[in-house]
Image (spheres, rainbow, N blue to C red):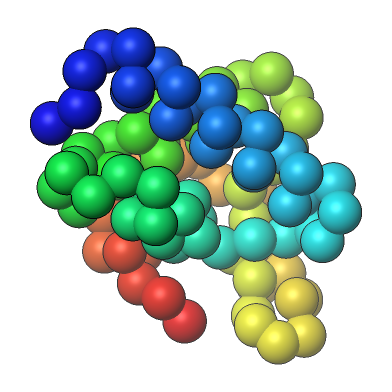
Length: 97
């Protein structure tokens, strides 16, 4: 596992990446957060990546800057109302669709 400072840096980078994607592209899959961490940090386990991705997503959601929703891909059509982080299973954080 990485040090606290490195985890803090990863959290900052992932938060910025999430906000950039949502602002510039639109809806993204939660798996994309974990996927991004795989490319940035090779010593974390998938469980640690999921935990960090959830923490970042929760922070962004609590700030009111984004809302989670299930989408069909393509064409980015919502299939349900708004969710909570707890509604998303660990498998969905790892599932690249």
